[in-house]
Amino acid sequence: MPAITTVVIGAGHAGLAMSKCLTDRSIDHVLIERGEVANSWRTERWDSLRLLTPNWQSRLPGYGYEGDDPDGYRTMPETIAFIDRYAKVIAAPVHSQTLVTSVAKTDSGYLVSTDQGDWQCRTVVMASGACNIPRVPAIVEALPSSIATMTPMEYRNPDQLAQGGVLMVGASATGTQLAKDIHISGRPVTLAVGEHIRAPRTYRGRDLEWWMDAAGVQDERYDEIDDIVRARKVPSLQLTGSPERETLDINALTSMGVKLIGRFSGIQDGKGQFSGALLNQCAMSDLKMNRLLGTIDEWATANGLDGEVEAPYQLPPTEVEDSPPLGMDFSKGEIGTIIWATGYRPDYSWLDVPVFDRKGQVRHDGGIVDSPGLYLMGLQFLRRRKSTLLDGAGDDARDLSDHLVSYLAG
Amino acid sequence: MADTVDNGVNVEALLGAREALTEAPEGAKFTWRASCKWENGTYSHSTVEGFFGLGEEQERTTVFNFDADHPLCFASEDRGATPVEYVLVGLASCLTAGIAAVAQHREIQLNSVTATLEGGMDIQGILGIDSDVRNGFDGIKVSYKIDADASEDDIKALVAQSQKRSAVYDIVTNPTNVTVEVN
Image 1 (cartoon, rainbow over the protein chains, first blue to last red):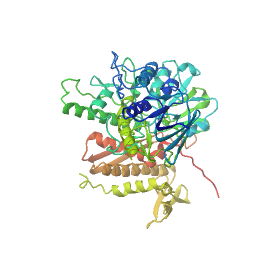
Image 2 (cartoon, each protein chain N blue to C red; image 1 turned 180 degrees about the vertical axis):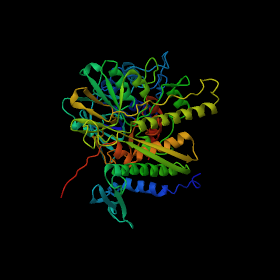
Image 3 (cartoon, chains in turn blue, yellow; image 1 turned 135 degrees about the vertical axis):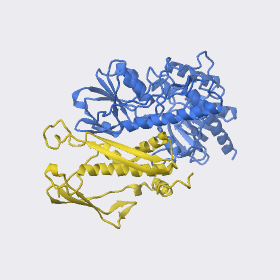
Image 4 (cartoon, rainbow over the protein chains, first blue to last red; image 1 turned 90 degrees about the vertical axis):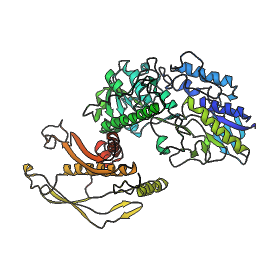
């Protein structure tokens, strides 16, 4: 059985950033990848998706954007090519088409079993992604069989869908983007809106991501924030990357003709039931956005940018009709497909180490798992607000590889 | 100014309970109860006493009494609030308690909080005149007047957060399975 110091599971941007840091620290390691480099980007994304962060904001250790469109947003082929080239530039020791079947504790470290043989190692870095399994609410069981359902992981483009209406459940980045994609295909979309975070693409003439980066919002640390448990569950910002740098908030969608309804909360007698809390969900989202923009304004003033960028302004409140519908009769044939843009969770079904809390999540302190020598990468707010971004992998990888080195040194 | 804000809410106790119940989630399972006795006509008398929570039966020092009836124009004798008004009372008191708790947690001093509630209803529903009209409210409007040492947006955020965490708001805005049996 081959032995090695570190096995990194997953060769996406997080695993590769870790690989570069391990190489820099002379730690021998391999990356085990179930498919090819950037596998999720290759196989689990829809056609029209572009990265939510601008090109310049993908600073990986020893690598970054060198093109002539720093403010643009990568298409999926461009994203895959970018990550693929990183793997080559850093000469990452990737074992592709290799599926991890289990990780177990041994006396000297861990045994990583794969469908291509086993590895004995002292440390393991799990960089297998935060979005492996779509979260689908249990009410799916009660749906009439006449309704087709789909997750964003299966969705590629509107041609996959039957003609007729689509109920998009969830109004975060995925739900809003798919709502637009499908609505312009001529299928009327109703968007079920629960908790979400409104975000303008640009503010005062700059990309929102630029502001959040410059003002230090993306660098906020997990051990300095008020309620980290909550911060790790906050939905994704309602952002989209497009050549037009458009803002795709609820107002933008309703002006295209997308209909709104409250959170999908139940099914009774073939009828969908939807929460009456839509107005508050939108009011809360507006308040949160205004708080973020207020933080940005304060930072701009404190840093002498007020003369340099556009003056502050208020965005109009989210408009919702006074009495949004509370029900939907699925027997009437108006809805042909329901898409569950209700989030994802990571898959640790192969992890045979007792590190799970009662909700099935891995117990960790900023990526340092509650089992010596075991590390996590790429999860929401793992160590910083930016932890899931391409731009966030570098700092986390530097911190965690430093920890790993000192752990090995005993 | 943590030490000067006092809305009469023991936030430390609430946060302590949250922490304790995160570790021992079984204790978080509560059962609330009410009993109702028909008196005459539309008049009934309800009482609220014990409940189950924190892993055991909980007793109160007082029995709370509630008379419910319908007003004179329903050919009743108006011996108590109507049941639908109790729903408004439940919603108002739940949201208001939440505002106090959230304000304390956010270190906002409340000076006064008042709410008025209106529930619109087309009684063609309950009278069976038009089956397209629902029995319940066609909407509820809650209006708060709040005087607090905070900005307008911070006050709005208090009220929004209170809705997010309110049990009665959830009960009213989302469906709940109701099982009624006869023994």
